[in-house]
Amino acid sequence: MKVFVAGATGVLGRPTVRALVSAGHEVRGTARGDEKSALLRSLGAEPVAVDVFDAEAMKTAVVGTEAVVNFATKIPPIVRMRWKGAWKENDRLRTEGSRVLVDAALAAGAAVYVQESITFIYSDGGDAWLDEDSSLSISWIALQSMVNGERETERFSTGGGRGISLRFSGFYAPYARSTLDSVSMARRRLLPVAGDGSNYLSSIHVDDGATAAVAAVDAPAGVYNVTDDEPLRMREYGRAITHAFGLRPPRRVPKWLFRLVGGGPVKYILSSQRVSNERFKKTTGWAPKYPNAREGYQQIAAELGDGA
Image 1 (cartoon, rainbow, N blue to C red):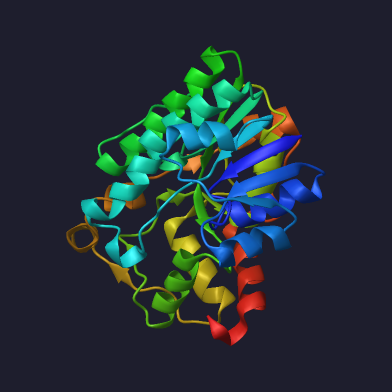
Image 2: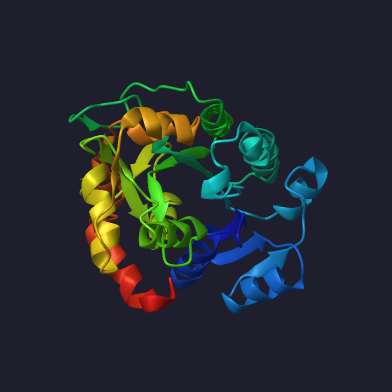
């Protein structure tokens, strides 16, 4: 299949391009500058220099494409996530960028459109499992753009194609800046657990997110959760990091202090999201290589060693 990947040089885009090429697909992807273009060529893909907000240029870029994968994001660093303004470009990519890409995919007659979304849009589920039909809670403005992207995906399906929204849980990987920052903070005991840490956090290794993207191009239209098999309670997730790197356990801080320091995203960090991947696994046959964050962070520690 001929696949176009927007965000091809990003944290999720790079392993996705590699996985698509390994699966036998012909891949083209967005890349700006010589260095990123060379990176895509090294992965076996063709780089395309195009602005995802340029509607006419995008239509030209995806001509002949059978599948469009939209993984274009701009996630701010951990230390800036509390600031609403730090999400401005990411929100534009999710809203305007998704609209432009869906228009281009429809104009090209593509069969499938895959959109990156996130499980953080679910309401607090306590100890219950959350599936794709569970209620949503969009009180943090930065999450509204995720819903906007999903609506554009639905529009692609209405137009006759297979629109697929992948709700990824929290990403981590040895090459993800957020993971490296988290490990660095854990070394200084600056990555605390709020309260008793009994709330669930769902997560997914980026490598597993990439193989899910490959499976998604053949999936029926719809919304799917992409997460590992065993969501951990927040205190267990913190210990997964510190144990993997031989560090002291995370400190505990009161929830009120965590809210005071953390800003807007804190509500979703403190909520309990025990997200199920059952629908996607049954539909596609996909399964994560790393069934939980304990095993995932052991792999990260083995790869990074003392350099993290």
